[in-house]
Length: 454
Image: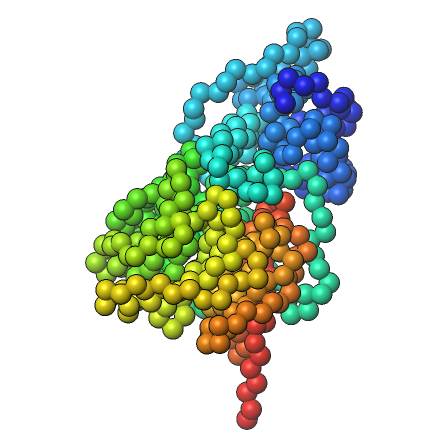
């Protein structure tokens, strides 16, 4: 790609691409150039087509290699401000390969730093070539890449969905769980890179608050609420390393602590509370998808291994109901599964196989979310290689699946989902995620209605 001669970009397209290289969002670019966000998106589509690329990262790297734009670092900004390579009479040269850069915590967007973040994303997508999504050769299963074309997201038929207060920052691949009627989102990825943010959403008041930041910024993680604490194990950090770290958040004290590490690094796993701890199921260990199941005993601060999955996979989702854990879908590097399996800890204690297979979903799903309430599993997003045309619900007692509408008509993955009961019935809270860009919407679905008679 770097050796090809791209179609000539207009002056406006070069101006816009220069802003893209600084890490500016579509909204920031629109404000800077005094144009609409839709116009920005139209220019980006034209740029991607002319350069024969499929993401902002690829466009930035190719433009720098071809000498189409310059990215000023803090050391050179003063010297190069207002001048181009052609103005100086110097033939542009491709940049030298960067030295490995250990990026820890949230990435800061700025000139030079944004380029380094972009290079890190490309490096991360190369580390896992066998795990890329089947929908696009440039997508990574672990880091989201913007697409050249987007489609209308909202659907007018989602009658039982409504919107809540927006997340503080649009994000995906974060951990989400509920405790004492409050929903927490932790870490993940944003347009600025890896996040350490901990945010709390009050469904009754429909408002957000910022809590103490997580010590380690990670993505592709989940959370389990047990014994008054919220546990976030493992994850993928900004250096591209899969971690074994376990950090616990205490909402009452608004403080984080570190617990015993996992037996092995994991990200993109399924997680659910069970008995006096939680299970970390499958996932990616940095080299391959795994079938391992780890149980963490909260009181003892101890990890134990449980019988494995039948199929090694990651990007699945899990929820607990009536003492059992239900694991839905997943991806093994080739196939997105519609599998539904349950883990019964009582059988495990008796030395029997704790896994049971149930009626599968109608379509394979990965990078979706699941929540359980009122004897039902609700699966949102991740359908059909990332397309969310519809969602599915599972009646646990009757082993039957049915479908329900989606508030999005487009790709929707790596979101968070929680289920809570209120006076009017049972509600699902689907937050953020990825739909060709990071989303910040809180979408609320009324799963059931309850009438209270005097």
